[in-house]
Length: 330
Ligand code: KG4
Ligand code: ZN
Image (cartoon, rainbow, N blue to C red; front, side):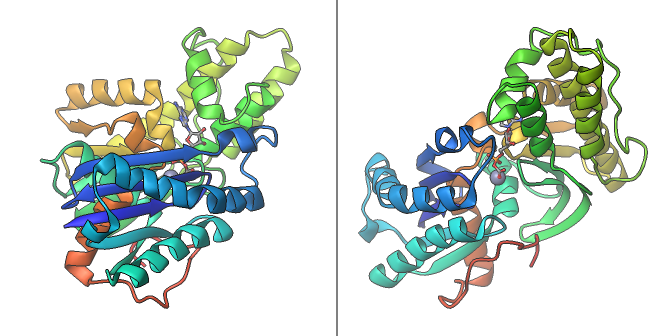
């Protein structure tokens, strides 16, 4: 079964063709980050308009690169939440229009679930149960996936998401947007032990808090204006990674699972990836690190989820909408 997936929940306009939930034939991503960079973050109205401008070309490109046509597509899927309302509506409307025009089923997909499925695209032998850390610009979630379609959210952020903290700290340090990749690069030149930033809520349950860490960075730099920016980047990144890795390992142990999966834009972070591989080796755990293009927002992961959802639950009714606050499992 060939699925066209569409992703427009934030600032990437993406379309992909995936066969049978696992075989990626094409994955096209048009990033809008240049448009938002001057504002230091995503501007919702600019994102919606850019999606409208880009969506038809991106879908056409995904068909060309896959060597297929809409006639050969068996289902059409789009992320219907969570995300920016206007941005989501562009992808949902495009998917429904194609579904109606071709007489194919439409499937609305949860964006978090899509990030979890990036792991299944990366490694075709991967099967639940496993625990996964979805870390992006909007979310920090620890999820146990017990079976296809069956999730338990074990922990989440009580304030800023991990990616949001990267973006805000980068902005404060004058490193531009998106901040995660900029801090990741600069941290390579710095000393991760130079500054002992706090590890918020490290031993306090499975939830996360990153807003105080961001404030600690701002206060430190104001007090020490001559500090090496690379040391600040490396020490901040070390604090975030310590917290993420410690909590992921802890829930894995509590859940008795032997496989860890990461997803979301922050899962592209080089220190997080290296640390998890090391910890996996030390603790005898299998660690699935999706390739960078599967970690950041893309539509292949959307088409993959849609295949499983279609088999399990059937199509989404065409009167379904866009759900900016959609929860996992809803
Ligand atoms: O999943 P994603 O592409 O979009 C959302 O759903 O939010 O994640 C984007 C987030 C941004 O906050 C960006 O700064 C962060 O992922 N990010 C990184 C890295 N690459 C992207 N954070 C840390 N290190 C990276 N290498
Ligand atoms: Zn995302």
